[in-house]
Amino acid sequence: MAKKTAYGGVMTACALIFSYVEYLIPINIGFPGIKLGLANIVTVIALYGLGEKYAFAINIMRIFLAALLFTGIFGMMFGLCGGVLSLAAMALLKRTDVFGVTGVSVTGGVVHNMGQFLIAVMFIANFAALYYLPVLILSGAAAGLFIGLLSDIILKRLAAFLLQ
Image: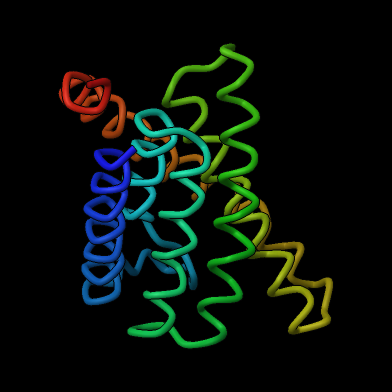
């Protein structure tokens, strides 16, 4: 228990660092709001290495701390909606044992963007934003693919530590 808690603290700090790096170096590919989501590497690793409860706690702590330090209340609302929905979807998909780490991560990326899209539609109250949904789905899938492949590699290297 104490070892998992220590890992959780270190992983929360790592996720916050990844959030900060992404905040400092925005990736501008011509579409607003598109990010790689580097902190989600930690979320996927926590989900597979520590379990759902720890992954949820790490994700929530990272979102609150990032909002406090970098993004503010709107960033927190977008982050919470996307983060909670994507982690729930990833946890459910992981339980099925049908998809591997990468497939679960791709689902998480897509659901994350859809959750943030829902918040955006509520704020702008304009369904013309639906035209932007395909871009968000594709970017979420691409980011989820990258994050999933990287997380899978890291999980294989960390297996000895996380399973002790």
